[in-house]
Image (tube, rainbow, N blue to C red; front, side, top):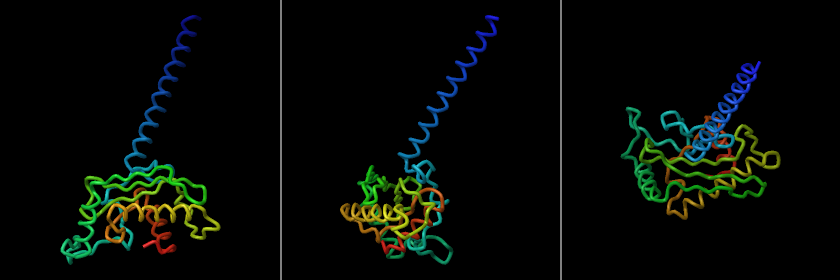
Length: 190
């Protein structure tokens, strides 16, 4: 009887330890993704590499006839120079940006090693991008995005770069790119 009770207690202790280690590992993973520039609900999805991202129409660099980026294009050259200007200041990380709709967002402007010379990442966390409603009266998420994006433009300007001189992507699932694109166009942010 004592052996059964000891075995039962041992199993409970082992299960508790396994659960604790699993929870700790999950927390470390989630925090690591958030600080590296993950995006989505709470910043939990890893940022895809540029090859996985379809750039929004207003940030696609011109291509050569053989479908390679046209580095001879003045627009691409300008973007390369703007990114060089910005690199020493990256990453730019603004946590708890207060919006007028009582949604605090986190702004993350950064680059990753495999990025092209002309490309940067701009992520705005804390927004539900699955609600694409653009009417600010119905969707405070749209207002929070607009105000956060205007802050991105301001911070870049203070860093000596005009957002229209760079190519950028939002990290995370495609719906974040789509909603960001929708709101940028709706609010005339570029």
